[in-house]
Image 1 (tube, one colour):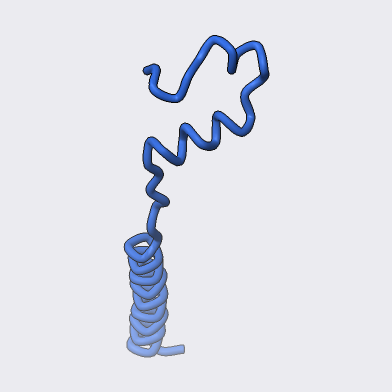
Image 2 (cartoon, helix red, strand yellow):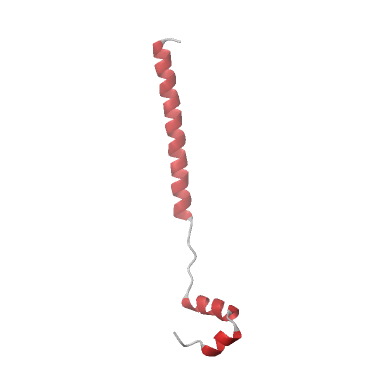
Length: 66
């Protein structure tokens, strides 16, 4: 292979590698921006706990304490 052909091959492989890296970075950035975190309110937390709390602990608490 001639030296100019080798340089051309290396340049093409480098360009292909950079395009793949750019596509992966774009895809990762796009997936992170569209991922939404769930939002919970205090009422959701109180309801979750009140459904799972034991009777002795429940007797010491009421919904308005805190």
